[in-house]
Length: 220
Image 1 (cartoon, rainbow, N blue to C red):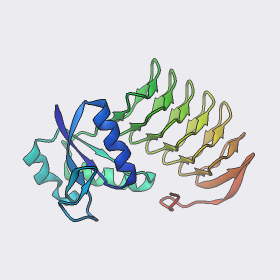
Image 2: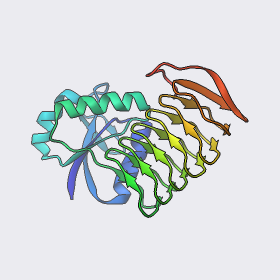
Image 3: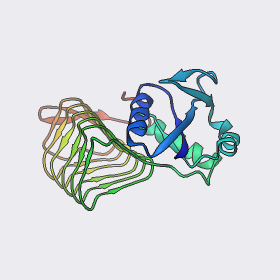
Image 4: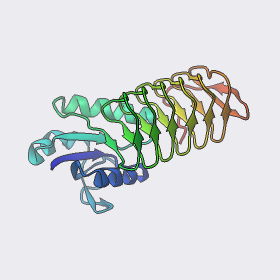
């Protein structure tokens, strides 16, 4: 079994650890987190160091991959770029829970996580470093661009497009054919019946734009 590291060690990382363990494809050598002391543990896995330690750790453990286990889309993008710059030969891997359903003719990019109970239906394209969270449903012919995320319980109709870095929050529902613009956030429990502008926050039933949003603004 090949050794990988997870970058991140908080609550989201706990779920990713569970997925990697249950999938049984990789063995977790440890965690990378520059904000914790080496030797601290999450679910029995030690923090090995921060991102700057990755080149030495890569050689020490003969790592075969890395997975960025960070929930915030913008932070995940920034950390992934840092890891790629430090260890350009270290590939990013995907993690798909055995209890997820992935349909025919689905493409899933490197670094993406698909959690328990999620459904990615036929002919979907899921980009790099995306999150399809617990019990989220992405219906046929949908597109998720890089660094986008669906929170637990999100439901989309078919032919939807989730823009790069966009976040659809817990329990939101998207009508068939909806486009969510890049770097936008859809609030929890929203019913989305029309397109959501890029760089905006929208919520409600039906959802409407509340205000503009700057890239990197916190939303979790």
